[in-house]
Image 1: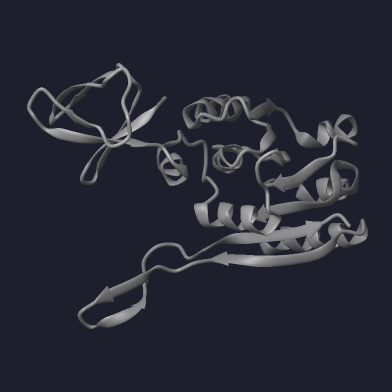
Image 2: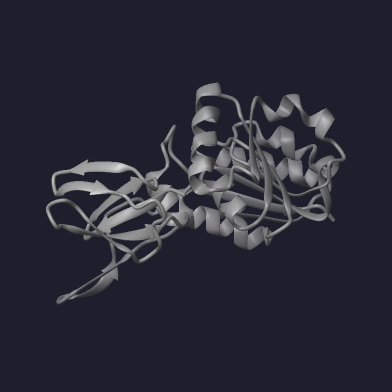
Length: 242
């Protein structure tokens, strides 16, 4: 089980029994580290053991591109109600942040990634997250497998691909009654195409949200939204099979 060793603003991703060399000394990671354990380097510097949770995965996954932000993942999970025992069909795996969150929530996920190298990295990330038994990363284009997957009765369909609209057109053959589709796009034009496709095939409860969030700054002068960082990330379209 991969864990974190934390000291102030430093974090080291380690495996049980690993030997880690740092500028604060050599650390012999215990074979069975428990959350909250304190580990000392040979120089007497201390580190706290911390288990990996969702935000830690976002920070430490090996990246193959810009991963979905936790706030966007939260919207997908909150608006679809995905949970333990649900079957999810996902496309556009990328780094695998969304797939990992869904797997950690207890869903069974089948995710497609076109790039073989990206898919290989995503599989490694699923192992790190401890969800490789619930998240199957397939190499390929979902659109090439729509016929064979028709009738599989997925509870949720999540898409982060340029051709999402063409998959949404097949949503009624992929989703259970009452199942949700969630499409993330960085461009509003793609969202318009997805909404049109959803309406065309009779999906309901269609809504598109801009995903935007600002941190607050508090200082002696007063309080206001931060002017630093990226507030806008993209657009999320949700629809449901009636």
